Image (cartoon, rainbow, N blue to C red; front, side):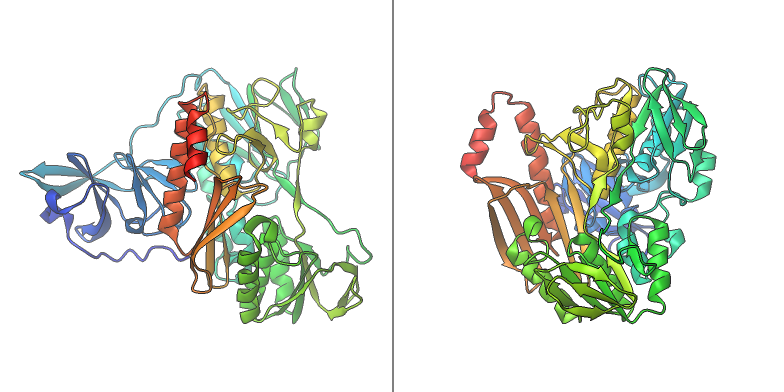
Amino acid sequence: MSAATGQAEGPDFTEGIELASVSEGEILRGHVDGEPAILIKHGDEAFALGAFCTHYGAPLADGLVAGDTVRCPWHHACFSMQTGEPLRPPALDPLQRWRVQIREGVAFAAEKLQRMDRRTMPEADALASIVIVGGGAAGYVAVSTLRHEGYTGLITMLSADAALPCDRPNLSKGYLAGSASYESNLLRPASFYDTHGIDVRLNSRVASIDVAGRYVETTDHNRYGFDALLLATGAEPVRLDIPGGDRPHVHYLRTVADSRAIVSAAQSAHRAVVIGASFIGMEVASSLRARDIEVHVVAPDAVPMEKVLGPDVGRFLRGVHEKHGVTFHLGTTVSEIGERSVRLESGETIDADLVVVGIGVRPATKLAQEAGLEIDRGVLVDAFLETSAPGIFAAGDIARWPDPLSGERIRIEHFVVAERQGQAAARNMLGGRERFAAVPFFWTEQFDVGLAYVGHAEGWDEARIEGDLEAHDATITYCREGRKLAVAVVHRDFAGLRAEVEFERSILADADDPAGEHHTRRQEAV
């Protein structure tokens, strides 16, 4: 997905728009003195905002208005219609807004308006020091949110990584394919952290947490005291335990350094074997083919990603890859990696001068467990993302939280979920009581196919397909015992947004209906 072009089109809102000609909730594409803008009618008011999402430049005219928000069609960022403020990641920068005057039923865009003043949370001045352990999506959004919410105390981010927080999903997509630079992949440049007084310590691994003493200690014996602590340690790739699994041409993909190493190896590689047909494996295969490398995918599955997306979608994605020259070896695993080849359990040998392993990740919970926090397939947190230790929160890949949509406790390894949890955790550290109720969302891009997934369907028993997968135009609804749990869309951005809003309304209805009558009616209606 490319960024906005910035070209103006449509009417000039400074010349006026008849509000009677605009439907309620319609997003009108236009410009203000040549600057691309959208105009939205909302009751008796109208709002003029920047035309492109501040995350990756998606055209908001293709998005959705829900209540007093406007939603990005690509990655589901959410903005306030009145203020242009980003209400939910992945966007963190506001939209430009213009004052709109309405005279005799005609809306005129006038001067630009400045960003709203920062809010001040209840305990913004009560905490002298906040420590964030982890330099990924959750940690980055947490520190950004703390400052935006008015916190002026000491913020320390301890990251075991060597690089600043980056757009991790892009490491297997544009960055690996060669279409995105390292600089463009940083979530913020170094100057952002300096400007906002955020002390970022890279290559800093935390060895222990003293819950009673309220400090963490790093492996180099530095101590950092905290009044509130966020654990966002992420996940670690599952490693191969086979002969040759530690050879220098065998790579894993988690960090910027990992992706750089694969890019470097790809400069001279001719044939790559990707072990694993998960999202990471399939995206790596797509990116390596973009570099004109022969790619073979090996996985024990009969159909790629069948467990998550179903057999029909899995077969469709396999077909997309095969049309682009990827060869699959399914129903088998790698038994040994040689200097220039891999041997399969089936007995087949594949020549390879580059091997990338993507067989899953494990949540990095050791630190939390040794600190005595409650663990159950992740770090257990409550609806406010607080762990069993007061004042210590967890977010991202390690957090296992009560999901109001499914009614189950879940843990999800998705970038946008981690960002949204980082935002909620930061606000709650400052005294907010914000239940984390965001609908899970992720996306994948493989060759010319974009698939977005809304909700969480673990153990679904039915996948309903509406549309035509081969035409890259479909909606897949995942249900269990008749209840809709998740929706995947292939090149149907608007349908994905509508599904997200529908799930949000279900969560709100359930919250107002503790007896469960709404849940029963909803099941009967599906």
